[in-house]
Length: 194
Length: 116
Image (cartoon, rainbow over the protein chains, first blue to last red):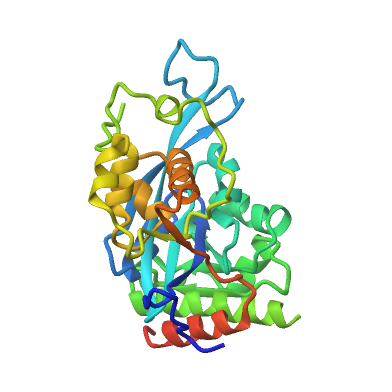
């Protein structure tokens, strides 16, 4: 396919793609999105309705339980007619129903983990292993650029299947984030070919 | 309660949505939306405040998520109002490519490789 078919009104046909940046609370999702985004990472609010009892009631007069969920996103211009959006998942477990919406139509996902708090990302790993059908990889966030554990140890500790790529990156560095996103795309291409 | 520029703080989202809770066209959060070259200031003036804000914002092609953030509207309501404007042909949608499209993945590869 040529990259830029013109639409009838002469405007270039823009299109978009999405990669999800997931992981537990405080693993560096916002940092990763902000490092590579050409706009300041935007914080948007989404409303979620759930029957879950632990969610704050905004208005005691209403039975329906709602909460405001904040999520960060950024954008990267790939070429003249393609924009890549990055969406950071809300970290807290109570927001998981929203993940399905975030993940729908994504090229793939990147699950960030912090080796000093692996358990923090168990749930995200579990989500992509069992509840989502997008290609995903795991990225060990090298806080301060230092690896504290061998990747093989991390793979074992996360009980990560062999087919899921595992890499390490300092997500404060835009180029490292680009490399990690490239790994997601490569993995997605492999899966698309079958 | 957070103040939203596009929505009077006393107006709850379901009021603006006139009780509707679902949109017919499933808009993904990264779907691009714009007024194309059909922007009409008279039409803009006739729209309800939240829709007008959306319509104005969409003069510059934006994703659903960007419109939600830019207009200060919750995501669900943003989808609903965009859906209304699409139905009457006031906005156009630029559908995202299938995420499994190899040509798309190749373009992403090339673009990201330039950033590494």
